[in-house]
Image (cartoon, rainbow, N blue to C red; front, side):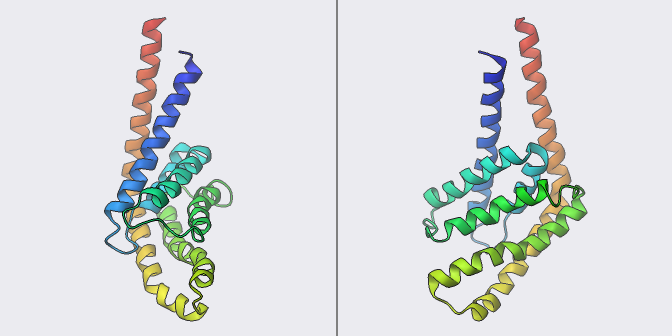
Length: 185
C-alpha cells in the first residue's frame, strides 16, 4: 500500500471518529436543552485538524443527526439552517477569526456563537412554523443564553486539555506510522 493511501485511510479514520464523537455526545446530552459540547468540539477540530477535515466532520454530523437521531429527523426545511450554523464555525475560525487561539478568546467566541446559532435558525423556523418573529425571538432567548454559557464554560475549561490530548494522539499515530514504515524498508 502506498504512503498516500495509508495517509488517506488515516485521515478518513480520524474524520469518522471525530464525527462519531460529535454525534454521540450531542445525543447523550440531548435531554438537557442547549447543553452540549458540540461547539467546543467543532472549535477544537477546526484548530487541530483544519478546515477541510472539520467541514467533512460537520457534513457527516448534520447528515447523521437527520438520519439516525432517536428524536426523529430534523425537518428538511431546517437542514440548511443546521448545516449553515455548524459550517460557519470553521469558516469563521479559518478566515476572519483565525487569530483567536487562546481558550479565553475562543470561549468568548463560543458565548457569542450561542446566540448566532439560535439566530441562524430563526428565519427558517418562523417561516416553517408560520410563527410571528418577535414572540419566537423572545421565547428563544433563554435557550440561547443557556447555549452561550454552556459553550463558554466548556471551551474555557476543556479546550486546552482536549487540544493537548488530541494532538498527542495524532502525534502517536504519526510516529507509529513512521516507525512501521522504517521497519519495513
